[in-house]
Image (cartoon, rainbow, N blue to C red; front, side, top):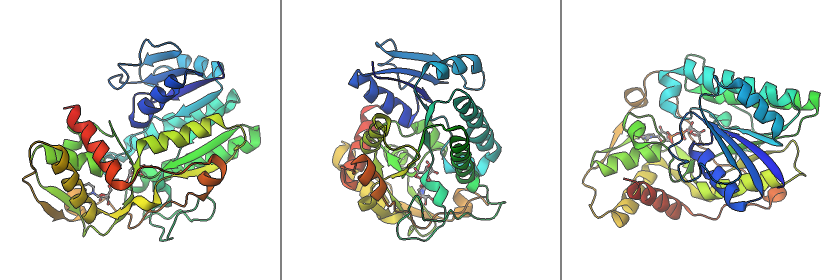
Length: 335
Ligand code: UGA
C-alpha cells in the first residue's frame, strides 16, 4: 500500500469520482467522510475504503485521528453554487471558510501533505485572456455583492495554506477547477431550485420541457472541463512527490464558450440522446431577476494550463461536445 489518503467530502461531485478512481487503482488506502453517502453506495464496504457518514463539524475527534493516520488530506467539503453565495452568504463563510480552516489547522498541526481545492472563481472579473496561477490578479466586486464571498473565502484559504506551509514546512498543492462538468454535478432536485451549476439547471429544464434561462445577454463565457480530465489531473498531483508548492489551473481552454451558444449546444446534444424532443425555448432574464441584487457575473474565464502541462504532463482530452453529451447522458440514465 503506497499512500493513505483522506478525502473530506467524499460523496460530492469531485469526491465520489476521485474516491472511485483511487479505489480502482488498488494502491491507496482511502478514508472518507461526508454528510451523505448516496454517491458512494457501490464503494462502501470495498477493501481499503473506510467511510464515515457525518458532519465534518461534529466528528472532530474521528477527523483528527484520521488525519494523523494519513499521508495526504484533500478537504473537498464546500458549497459551490452561485445562488447560495447570493442567498445565504453566511453559510458559505461558515462551511467553506470556517469549517475548512479548522481542518487546515489540524493538517498543519500533524504536518501532513494537503491538496486543496481552490477555484477558478478566485480570478473573478480579471480580464486577462488566460488566467495564470502566478501572474493574474484576483479581481472581485464591492462587499455588498455577496457573490464574491465564495471567491474570497477560497482565496483567503489559499493564502493561509501557503503561509502556514512555508512557516511549518508542510507540503501542499492547490488546484483550481474550471467549470468541471460530469455525472452527479448537482442533484436535479437542487438544480430545480436554482441551486445548481448552469448545466444541471439546463438539464433539469430540458427534462421538464421548461424554458432555458440565459442570465444577462449570454456573452459571458466559461471553459467547461470534463470530470474525467479533472480526476486524471488530481491523480497525477497525488502521485507526484516533485511538485510541492505548485498551484494548478485544471481546465480546458479549448472548451471556452459563451453561455448563449452553450444553451444551444446543450439542447442539440439533449435532442440527440433523449427519446423525447425538447419543446421549450431559450429566454433571457436579468441578473437581478435570476439571482437578486447580490450577484455580479464573470465575463470571461480561460485557464492558462501551462503549469499543469509542464509539471503534471497533463492535458484535457474531452472536447466540449463530448463533455456535454456524456454529462447529459449520465443524468438521463440516472432518472
Ligand atoms: C462556478 C461556481 O462558482 C463554482 O461551482 C465553481 O467553483 C466555479 O464556477 C467553477 O466550476 O469553475 P459559475 O461558472 O458562474 O461559477 O457558475 P454557473 O452556475 O455554472 O454559471 C455559469 C454561467 O451561466 C453564469 O454566467 C451564469 O450567470 C449563467 N447561468 C446560470 C445562466 O445563464 N442560466 C442559468 O440557468 C444558470
